[in-house]
Image (cartoon, rainbow, N blue to C red; front, side, top):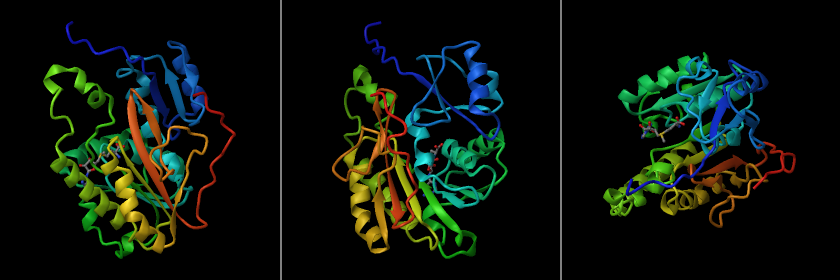
Length: 296
Ligand code: SAM
């Protein structure tokens, strides 16, 4: 073809849903057909050869494994909710991170999954059903309209905020410029980016209002500074005045963003996701620095 997209040879990552299957059993099962390795950052992540098509694999169909990229799989572990906690997923559909949170909670505690779009609630419910989690309450609502002082949220200790974004870090978007039809206009629409950034900033500020919150993870699959560093930077003074500080999850992870020096994420052809973790002072999760030596 004239406009062939280059072979970026991105591995296929799968996250083992530990609510249904343990990692070693998943590994053994997948090894019957594929060459599989464990990821050295996230214990629940397995790496398969690029372009492995798993859509019809029984383990995918029965919810034992989820096809979820590494960058996306770093977000819930960055929040590291402890079993028993109440967690709010502010922008939840289709629910990949919601059910990852459920696996980390080990069936103890509760997740409130909020999603604005009615038509995306079905997808969210399907993901939850497939995961086997039974401690997730779905809310079809605007996160910005949730009243943080409602008793329903009085025990929410951790918030995962993965808001709508431009998606400029996804592989499709990052390779778009190679396609002649998409060569112009990609993410040059500053009006759209400003609108997204305004929402993202409001949502992060709103997350800080929940009375019992100790940790907030903010993540996007955009590589635009305006949707990432700028959002966190603008909210940071308010956060700090409420006792929060930026944390550095995955200390061994080398791909970090601009000077806030608190970003983690994956910059590789498959997906660039940038995320940040705000923690109440003294409430920082312990990250295993140095235990998992990265092969970079
Ligand atoms: N965290 C999800 C996952 O890992 O599967 C992906 C979330 S997606 C990037 C953002 C979601 O936020 C969309 O489903 C969108 O409809 C929803 N959303 C946008 N604005 C919202 C709002 N004000 N309140 C709640 N959800 C919202």
